[in-house]
Amino acid sequence: MSIFKNKLILEVRKKMKNLIILLFVVTITLGMFTVSLAAIEPEYVWTWNTGAVPTAAHAQGGEVFAKELERLTDGKVIVKTYYAGSLFPAEAQVTAVSRGVLDFCGDIDPNVLIADQVPSLGMLASAYLWKDSQHMTSVLNGEIGKEISDIVAEKTNIRLLSAAYMGTRQLGVRDIGRVIKTPADMKGVKLRMPNSQSWLFMGEALGGNPTPLSNSENYMALKTGTIDAQDNPLPNVIARKFYEVTKYIIMTGHYISPNMLGINEKLWQSLTPELQDNIMAAADKAREFVDNLIKEQEAEAVAFLKGKGMEFIEVDRDLWREHVKNYYLANKISSQWDMDLYNRIESAAK
Image (cartoon, rainbow, N blue to C red):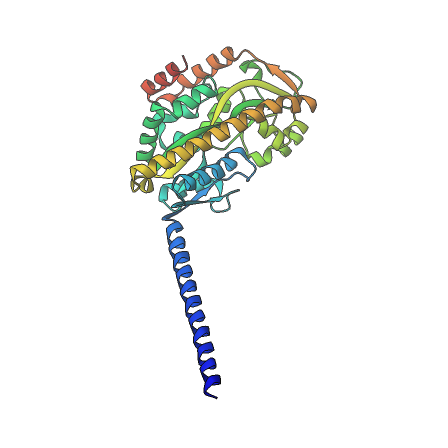
């Protein structure tokens, strides 16, 4: 019996030893796992919102921004992206960033943020300010852009980080019995414009009769004749199927659309210079992505729309530019513009 007991004791001791070793390994593993989790726990979780659907170029740019910022900060910063106004509707997101209840806004329009709240920078919402996309990109993402960002931040509590190219707006016109080639030909043309003072004035400066409507109402309004024309970049004409209810694309190229990324100014000022640099680098990468995608889409859009039977009308843009700029400068809307800055922007095109 004693031999049996000794064997039993030895077996029990062996199993206990194995159990202790197993528990030790498990404890170490769990400890390492806990340390690993602590190491990747983000220090910041921020929100980014756009009114655009996920397939839109600047919405995709938001995803690029979020991933690049997470990479640059080794996971210390997570940006949660919200599309189609799912966190804040498009008309409320700018106010949300200003108040600090939203961290980033992915599609700031100068006509919405700047023209009404910072009149000295109202020229940024005017037609024919930009010679081309390169002019707009170099100015708004360069030294002048930094000055503009400082002014906007002081007035609105929103700091502008970058300005992507969102396309060149052209006029899409239904069959009204004549072809438009000059601003004089726009007389009596009911031109849909977004419902803001600066947008409506732009329609007036182009020679039309501006009619405020949301983009979602354009299609039926063109189909029923409630309006005669709309203005959008060519990819938008395809996305909203305006080619079904319009006949002509008048290549006025009157507005180079910038899409601005903005951050709450109080949040920005609370960050380290290193983190600010990371944000700017991520914003720049997202901007380049959007720029390239939009230019590809515009190039493809011409062939697509011609295939749908639309007629492209080339016009004398210098004539349009002179008419429109003279209209702005002769009107009180430009009386509060910083003309020194306006002239510097124009000179940058040369």
